Image (cartoon, rainbow, N blue to C red; front, side, top):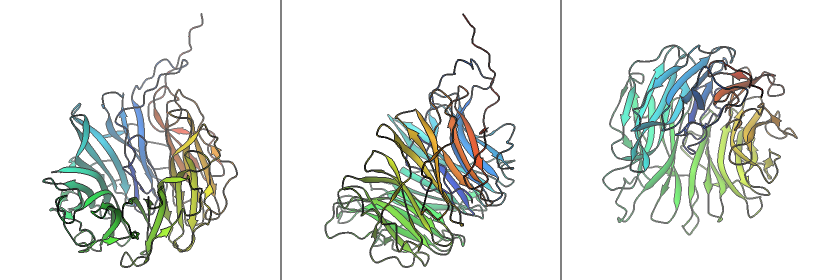
Length: 517
């Protein structure tokens, strides 16, 4: 099963790798600066002083692995975007990585990067360029490159989109035909931000302007804050089904004192959209609450499933809505997923996935009996019913936290979770848990996958599954003295793993013994 992006923009520190279907997608909101680590005593110098961090990877049905990452010596935002790949399930890699872009230091830096494949030979990379304006870095440009031979060669020209106004939350998505769709929010001439979307033509070689402003729930365009109604959009999400229909979601504030979850769709590859967007949350009689940060999953059979964070009960809960006809109709009332839990609980960071039969899996972190623990729920009937009680998947004590979880599943009932666990801010390990029965039961004790070596230890992991059921975990670690990327894999649905993980970046380390005194 290929990798799939759920949430590519949220945290600007950690890499994200997640799972999906035939169109593989993964996204990363990257760290501006390289990890700082010092060489251990037994490794005084290295042949390659370049570091590698914040990986994004996709894995196709045949076990081909594609990875983009930040590379450089660290400091002063001086890093580049690199690509590497393996065509044999991680056994061998490119002898030298491909450098995809070189920002103009120190005025520019790379923001997020996103990697996609169409399940055949096309590999697409999209990334943002940020510009320093005062004390803030602003998203000012999107760049895009493609390869049509599994990443062996790349187009010489970089496709660019320069934002006119103040823009946020760029969300790219490439179709199977190679056309790029870009969704973002933009403010112009003093107006509040609205969702804007544009597509390419000629197989991703040129833009097909002008951008389209997606409407509100009353079909209204953006208005001044002092007008009778106005819009303020944020956190868009975008996905595409096997038939090429596009589904866009975002949160939008109104003068009624609430923030809603809005939906729109295009059945013709982004040429036309609904004249009026649909509200997916059910607003209570009084305003003043927030529905925010929607995440979306599709089953490939016109099933669209959406979960978001909601504050209507004076804490952070999850709510759910669905459409089984490609977005034409939705549930009359949204579903409260986290109704059964302690009153002091607060959920965050939902990750949602689905298979072709409409089995839904939801993973998140929650503050319940302990801070930042990992919880899971599922539905086997396309969201009609869910587990009454969420399952806790981690087992850490009060001094540790769980962070950066990833979720994967296949169509045979295997469900996988991987996360970083440790004490803030650095020391931790890579943990893994699995289910063989659609998430009904899990391992009583999670597995530790990394070796635990290095000054600061591993950084946050990614998870992917290919068409043969092989499970792949990728993470960064400074065990060689500088951060590099590592991979482990399981060929039996996570029961056993390689005895030694595979280093996929950096040249071999030169070591010399420490002089005795």
